[in-house]
Amino acid sequence: MQTLKKWLSNPKTKQVLINYCLITFGCLILAAGTVAFLLPLDLVTGGVSGVSVILNHYLEPIFGFPTQDIIAWIVQVILLVASFIFLGKKFTLHTIYATLLYPAFLTLFMRTHVLDFISDALNPAEAGDMQIVYTLLAGIFGGAFSGAGVAVTFLGDGSTGGFDVLAAIVAKHTPVKEGLATFIIDALIVVVGMVCLRDIPNGLIGILSALVCAVMVQYVYVNSNTYVIADIISDKTEDIMKYVHDEMEHATTVIDVVGGYTGADRKMLRVAFHRKELTSFRSYIAETDPRAFVSFTQASMINGEGFAPLVSKKRKK
Image (cartoon, rainbow, N blue to C red):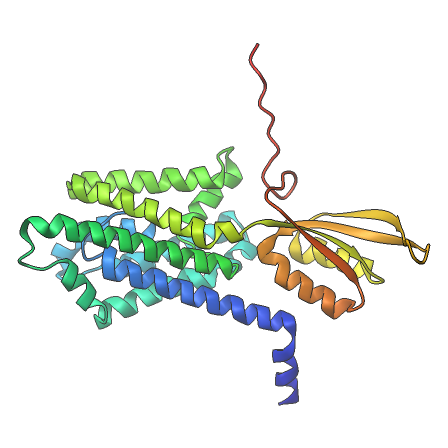
């Protein structure tokens, strides 16, 4: 019992538990928004849900029941295997929880029909000309739920997997950046959906839904996803440096400093990292050297090794 209490009181353990709760909640929101708003109205917004809508258009008449969740399972598992092959064990283990949890929630909501009251209200039999308005509402709210779910998952230092894995593979093996690769993949899925479903208005609403999703990610996650520069003066500089190199996979800079009051020669460690790593890093320092002096400075952008590359645009003569 004492061992359990000690384990739960560990700041690092608390952060891990918080992260898993955020990832679980994010997958829950994402799956709920997909099942309630996007799938019933065949809205293709890119990603795994978009592929499942397209393939279900052909498979449901054959099997006689909706297959979107089954398709999502198959796609997620295939991409998980691709992640292990092309991106390595560490990346795959980091994303495996959310990658499998999202289709699990998708199946839960689809097969229990607990959200049918929302989809039925947005797809009434007597809608007539008003159906386009209901579809537009579904696209807006579906995009908002999807964006919020993805953002909350990111805040838990996780990923919903899916075609993010394919974008990461493209970014690793080509000059194309991950953000651009994601945009291209989602755009192709939307275009294919418009062609296969032969429904231009729904396709345009799907694009609008994807934009709403991006805005939600920006609002919930990106605005809080700034960078931090930490200056640390500690008696355990070597231990902290090893943690930064091995666990955080960031570089460090050691600066010779002199204490203004004591006149003693000291070593100051400077580290740049993402804001989402702040809590775990601060917890580690508190465990390793509670008497350490640490200052954190927020930075809006950091370029260089381990971050966005520093690009210089040459002026044309």
